[in-house]
Length: 171
Image (tube, rainbow, N blue to C red; front, side, top):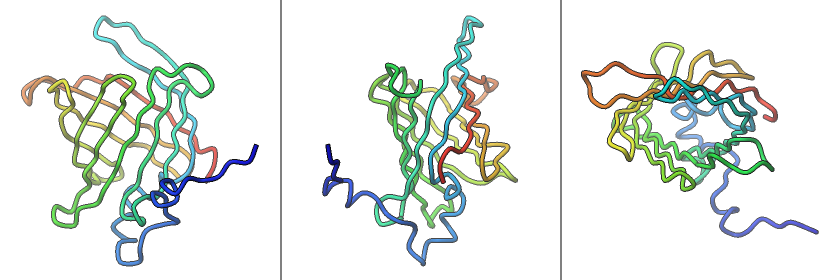
């Protein structure tokens, strides 16, 4: 069977950022490619769930945005998470608009992402009304540590809910 790329996917995908945006796109540009990951979910009752997973990232919208797909566990196992993030740089705020959607779990978040030292920190709210902080840490060319945290209000401490330890599988 021969697979062809639909006109929609051809219009969505891009080879890279436009020259006038290339420097601004560096904050997340290193993500482009495919990753495998070990995922940990920390539940409120102290239970810990572990899975493997995969993540695929690419340039979209004429290279003016980066989109990724996070899948847990790795295919072909039945999914417990299958979502996408759209990351768009906004020069007006010198930051990134982050929009996460996981229709499988009806999980949605909006955040603003910026560099903090060697890390990337995204702050926002999710569809449950919780404050969220997602961090990319220990970033190398071939690995990263992603930490997801939440809290009900500004006065509450951050609680780690998810961690992903990712390794590059394809540039």
